[in-house]
Length: 265
Length: 167
Image 1: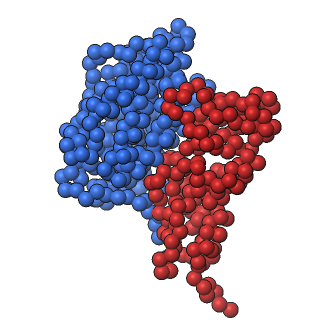
Image 2: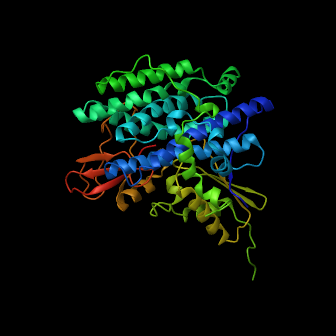
Image 3: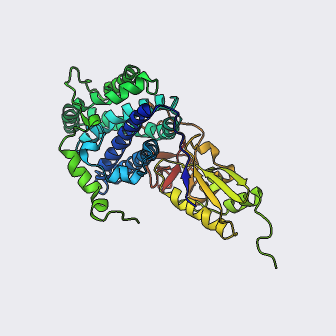
């Protein structure tokens, strides 16, 4: 007899269920891709404790991704499993935001990418845990506790680097200049998200944006860093238009299943 | 000579679960940890509901297997294990006995206070070193050897130690 995950699927029209599937996949892909990027640091961190921190955060995100993939598979209802969704889709089918797939760069790049994501992630989960979709609420209720530790960690590093040495400040500013353009996509609703917002399944992102802005402002002030203004925002990940980086990442992530289909531990 | 003449009782299942330990902190039973959320008998089927400590906790599969093996040893084959996310596990569900066992094992048990997201740079609860019992300790990293632990050091005896962090 198999172990089972208690998954509650809402009673909605097939069309709305399809949109929900697409959205849950977007959450799953973003968590998985960012988890993979962080895992690339394993064994290469600047010091042991921070190497461990990135591996820990990666593991939390991977666990969250699995919960979303399991739910997505249930929503789709066509027999695909969490593993099929993660290992057997191509880059154009991936729905992760562009931010998640950006290369690690130096430690400052990784920290800036992480803080932009953590601030969004934490405030999104706070909303989702009281939302009408019981399964998303359950996953969010679980993950928000982990996300709170993540955003504290990345905020502390933004402050250390920004208000640190000339070199650390130079590096964190370069990272902000390179990565801020990917922050807008997080709270710019795709067509799928607009449908779900209209149906009451997702909150208005303007409210989340305000909370994120306040969070970022507070941390940046302490880091003596200016919050970038008027940056042109890139988007496309949510509809499968990715940077060239994702293909290379997936080649490594999916190598084993592509080379030995159906392989199990 | 009658084998398995009596059906298992809920009480007996709970006793058996007490014998299943956390694979990463073997001094704790899964009941000490508070991850077993329910035991139910439906006819001759046993249903056990568990909840993960952390989303990515790699011990969950091992724990499910260990539950299965322990119950199988008692002749219980019709077992369903359900994974449930909500309500989310919290360190408040850890038993007092569990907390004492943790400290004796060298891991500082979770404190009541939960840090706010703006409590940065070690504005954390005062912890007692599980080795020399000094409270002159410092946070090294919020992320330790497993997902559920932070890494501390004692300023007096200088020993590093794990803290089972609040969740």
